[in-house]
Length: 341
Image 1 (cartoon, rainbow, N blue to C red):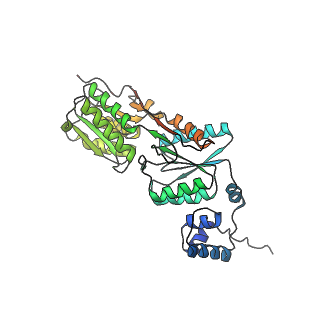
Image 2: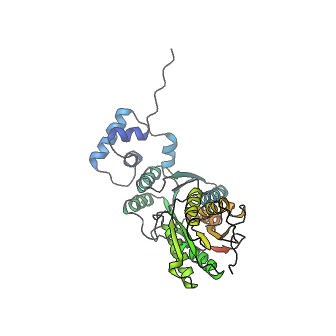
Image 3: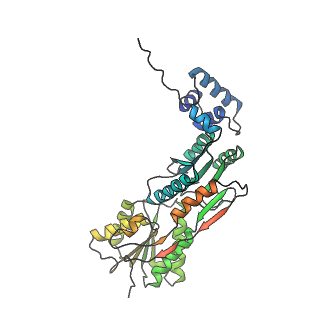
């Protein structure tokens, strides 16, 4: 009579039985250099023995050192992140390594847990990016996990902001916003609405500040500029623009990314408002969709593919001193904006 196969016991099962986080269980059983309280360590080992937990052979091999580079990001479904990941994978193939990915939805607890758990598997490098990161201001708990992983022989690359502790690639988000605001002001737009996305997104906040600075420097009065928070999606841009149309119609809509701008185009089209004859629309990023919509979208192009390739290059470096890069955006004028007379 055949035997019923025993269910595979996972690290999550051990953590639950011990009453600790998965990251803590991983540190205890994965040989992490990060100290764990003796009581927690004892509970984890007892739970592992009771459940007859055996670490997966592939995971053991990774702990000895692997050719994996792990990307930890907020959301893998955004067009901008898709460009970065595709470039990372192309560059990694050329270097004979591969990329694994993990999405945290920008939640700090999930970021900390992901670094602890995935770092215990010993990928060659961890690449982290998040819209919540601010330059030189990583959360203390996350910083501790990253330093522990680095002490164990891994390499850390931060993408999106400059961070002096690790290799980093920062976007000049303020500069991108300023280029957008300056262009709209210099082409005669005086009533401008800025679609700002959620207020907690640090990269968006920097773009808003830059756009305001560009508008002010070119003579647009502050009272003529409206900053509108909204969901960071096409639907969010569409809903925010619908609200704008019902009031004093702006001369231009400046969105902190192209996805919001495409939503704005949709709302204006539905309302019968001509773009750019009545309202100009512009964004930031230069995703593929920006060149496919009608009218084609004016935007500040960020070198997203270049950043993805550079992230792999930094991850594979052998030099111990961190390298820090800052990338600039460039204005791409298309048919969604026009000179306002």
